[in-house]
Length: 315
Image 1 (cartoon, rainbow, N blue to C red):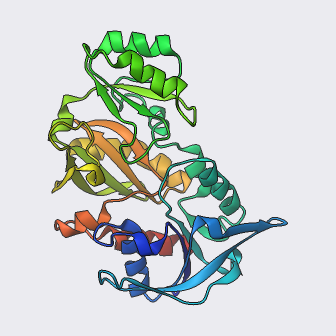
Image 2 (image 1 turned 90 degrees about the horizontal axis):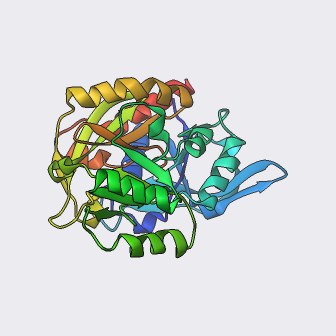
Image 3 (image 1 turned 45 degrees about the vertical axis):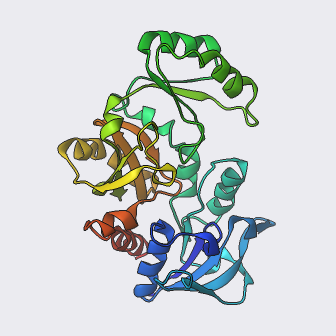
């Protein structure tokens, strides 16, 4: 089976291939003989309901600073493709939402990974509340008094924007922190894009790491631990978190068993969940990462598993 696979992603010239999951997927697809095409979200168009993009044929190589070659770009009806990988990074803003509406026009005749309707309807920090009993105490609101009461109840808390990503806008506030009022002013009154704030009880287990567990077709297949730097509550690798090899444990499999069937039925082929101290904090469905790091630490080649799933769905 040779598929035409279009990859909707951020500028390919700027990626760090050492840890880029989209690049890993491109390498795996090319290795199987699939034809690759590349475009950025800004190259999408919809004319009278027909969705097209300015596609460039793509070749990839696992060589730093020489990792891609592009052919001549051509405006192409995306119905000519077999698969579209929607892989641009958040923020999950109105441009991202618009892209899901565009791609909804071609799915499932063209397999969009992940299903654009599911991506739109599963915000990564809101969606987990669907699964009762897996999250730490969590409040989502723009009500200042509700946030004040939550802090009074739990003392040590984490604050973050609902649609933030990559550790941006994440704050830890201990019970005696006098910055709470000023931070409320900044988050609720000074925000350029008003959105709810998430308050969560601080999990001391974060010092041992924030585990990213990868699910393919609802099954947990690998994990990576990310340990925050000293003096930082964030474990994201690009803000200083240290990646470590780690095995799936019984709790990871228990969480996956509870949420996996729902993800699979929604058309979320590839997801990454975040687990701290055995508690679920996020379900990443937009542009999950960490598969290259997992492989580098001796774990499974998850890119190949994802391609297996895509080929099975196309078949």
